[in-house]
Image (cartoon, rainbow, N blue to C red; front, side, top):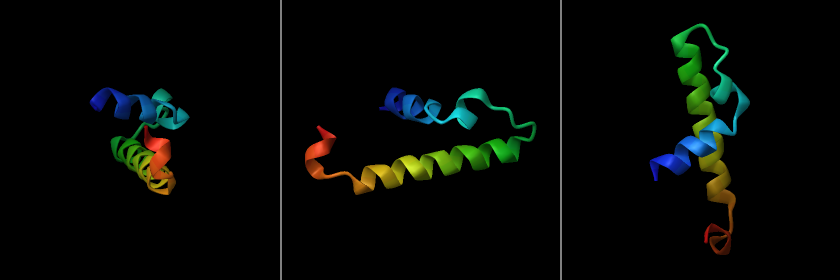
Amino acid sequence: TVERCVSKLKQHRAVATRFDKRDYIFHGTLATAAIVIWLRDLTKEPSDTA
């Protein structure tokens, strides 16, 4: 759900605090955090996703 996605993104300090002054840098940080979350979910065992 959307709430879970936002919660996972807020676990990254740079996304939660947003110290970036430039919008495109923040979007890059957001994309990087999303990729990290996606890669972690890919490496989980199927039994871990309950």
